[in-house]
Length: 113
Length: 114
Image 1 (cartoon, rainbow over the protein chains, first blue to last red):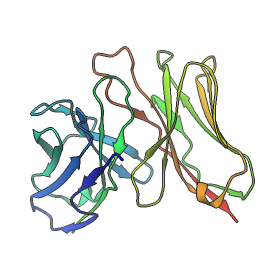
Image 2: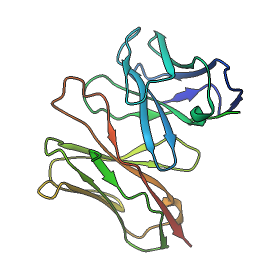
Image 3: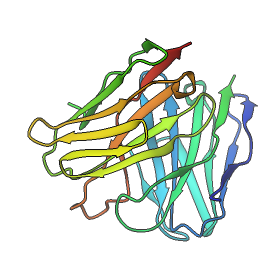
Image 4: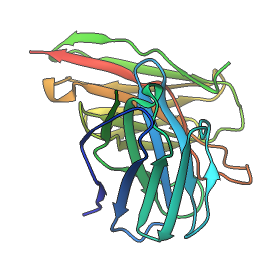
């Protein structure tokens, strides 16, 4: 059974803190993605990675960075959290190639105070 | 104009109703279309995957693609309260250099009332 896990379901941080969100998949997928989901704005891609140490910007990369040191793990980093980064963060993974099914984790609800 | 448009709803129907969920898209090069279902406080999961025009059926669910109108639909027959969720349509640029990214609709929130 495919599985994508995220380190926390709920997280509360203060403005200016450095925040790490971790995602692990056990399906040997090449691609991994970080999205944020907000009411009225839908799913928006922050960054994705198609191989270890490779990354590409998505639609809204500002204020975020990522790290992929191992194939199964993809981290999202908020260097200095701000209140407008309060959101639901979803990680997904897929096999390499075009348009393959993305498998999502349960999400992390991040609140920045 | 967004590449994929989807009415966010919410849509509320009685149990047993036929539900129609719809998306429109702007790029005639899109060939593959997906419907994902997202329950509250969960990540989306793939429900159906279609290619080209026509219908694809899976149990109570039918996905339909009309390329001439650039319109995709998901029909749910005999809807159940367990179908209450947000339904997202998605597609991707099959001819683009980097086509691993999906292009998402906003999602339609559906409530099926007992």
